[in-house]
Every structure is written in C-alpha cells, then in structure tokens.
Image (cartoon, rainbow, N blue to C red; front, side, top):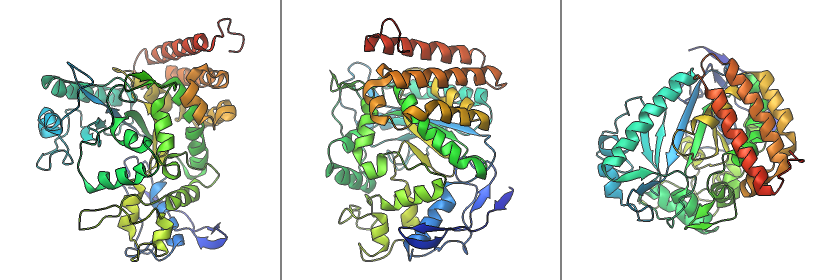
Length: 449
C-alpha cells in the first residue's frame, strides 16, 4: 500500500503550543485497518500530556486518500412477530442467530460471516446490526447488503422474530439485554444525566454510511458538508415518532434521544478548517464513561474527562489503548474512524435504507458537488433540533432538502455503478416526503416551498 507522509504542523491547544504528530496517510483507508502511527510518532506506553493524546487522535482518526470506497451498517430493533410489545430474551436471540451470533451475545459462537460477507453484532438492548464489507461499486454494495439482510430476516423469522421498521422502539421500555462491564458502566454514567442514554443504548436503531475521508486538501470541506447535511437527512428520513405507543411530538425522537444522551459526546463535533484538531479536542474533553479494570467494574470514579485523566484525575495515567477505547464510546452524528461514519439517519423499513446510502454516496464522489452541498445547506447547517422536532414541516429544511436531493438524483443518473432505476426511486421518495411535510405544515398552496 502506498503511504504518504505529511510534514508536522504547529498549533495551539488551550493557549499552549503543541506539535501535531506526523500523520500516516494511506490511500483508501475505509475500514480503518490499513496503517497505525509509527512508534516514533506517538508514545506506545503512558500518555504524558494532552498534546501527545491530541497528536495520536489526529493521526488515527483522519486518514487520507481519494474517495473510492463505500460501506454501510444497518441496525434494527427486534420484536416477537406475534406481539411487538413483548420483551425480548437474550437466549431467544442467541438461538435465532445461531453461528452468526456475536461473542457479546454468545462467547462460544464462531461468529460466522453472512453469505455476502457482512457480520452481525448486537447492541445492548438486543438490536441487531449488520456491518457490510466495503465496495467501490454501489451495485455490489447493495447486492451484498440485500443478500445479508434477507438472510438475517430469515434467521430471525424461524424463531418467530422480526426486524423493526423504526428508528426508535415504538412499544417497549428500554431494557439492557447484554451484561458486560462496558454497557453497565455506560448505563451508569448516562443515568446520571437523564433517561435518554438508556433509551439510546437499548431502543434506537439507525442506518450508518461509511465514506472515505478524501484527499488532504479536501478533508475539511467533506467533514463540514457531512455535518451540514445532517439536519436535512435527519428531517427527510425521520422515522421515529412513537415511544411507548404514544406520539412524542418529534419527527425523529431517535435524533432527540441521541442529542440529549450526553452532549459532550453525542452532539455534533466542531467543523473548522482543522477537523483533526477539532475532533481531538472534542474527544479529550468528553467525560470518561468506561475505565477498563480487572475487577469487572468499569465505572469511572467521577465524571472526569479523558484530558483530566491524563492530568491525574484517576491516579495512574492512561495509555494509547485506553484512548482507543475512549474513542469507541464517542457517538456524535458524524464520527471519524480513519474513514467518516455518518450516524444521523433513522432506521428505515424494508429496503428503503438504499435511498440515504445512495444519496450520500452520490453526493460525495465529486468535490465540485461537495462544494455545492455546502452552498445549498448553509442556511440549515446547524438546525439539528428543528430537524428532529419538525422534520420537513420546517420550510427552510424542506427547501434545502429539495435542492440537495435534486443534486443527488442528477449524480445518480450519471453514476455508472448505480442500480437501474435508483435515481427515480430516490426522487419519488423524497418528493413524497416533501409533499407530506407541506400538508402537515398547513401550507397546502405551497407558497413557501
């Protein structure tokens, strides 16, 4: 694999000068397994300062290369077909998934790949997720994921279980099925803030899209555009109005739940011209929710941030592995993992997950289109709460959605690897959503649209 090195740059952290680590840059690093920082670039033992930790985060979370690969992760709540309100039992889910069950559910499972190469994981409340292999072709990705989704539905169907159709469990109270030190510590930490954290862990489901970060000169623009699209996609694909069988008053109660779980770790990260530094600061300022220990209790003794841990809040200093683990507990709408992971889309019924995946893939293939996205979303780039609450009843979000998806459809029509008819399908879906939003807002004449 070709590796390119960037020169060190200097900057300021909280008024103190720091040197950012020399970054390993690999071509097409979607999947995050291509390169690790060299040992002379970041410490391999204890982290001695915030500057060292920031340098490490910057070096592993943003890896550069031409945008080429695409992946997705689909997550669903799981229900008994005969009664979606009935609580789910871990043993029932384990038997249903059989050899495809992850070790978190069955430590003795071989954890086989699904026929298309995806793997199943299970979230704390029993939500099932499949993570696809990456592909350069949309058609190949959709074929793989469709095959593996059908296989997962079949496995569950034999046990009388079905996949949910919504981004938030519409019926059941949040209940943690997985008994692990990680999830126990997270639940304890989130419960100190409010009820949203447990609901996020146990009752939410989403569509995640994974994209290459892009060439060095374009990473900041792509990072900004993915965030600016967040309110638009939240509104267009809002699919979680119900909780405990009642209307919540929010178009996406899932988005509301995530944004309120633990704002220092679940709110959107900053978007400036230096996303690596922004992300490093954001991550280090987030409270530690899991501190791995041999006694099985991973609950941290206080609400200290990772930066405060480095400064001595827990006595012994953390190491790189502790920081890696801390990064895995960050849940913002867009998360850098070498590639860029988009997390703001509600779960969709049936095969409708293809619509947001195709739209994002199309919009981020051309840097000219990325710049156009930034232009079309400028007025709503920070409208996360209106998007979650009002969806496409909000006129500004509806205007931006119409412009963005018109652009996406034109890109799909020109894409040689897009499945036949996909552009028309995206167009039909979005216009249906826009019409529905207009009717809900009472703007039947359409004078504001």
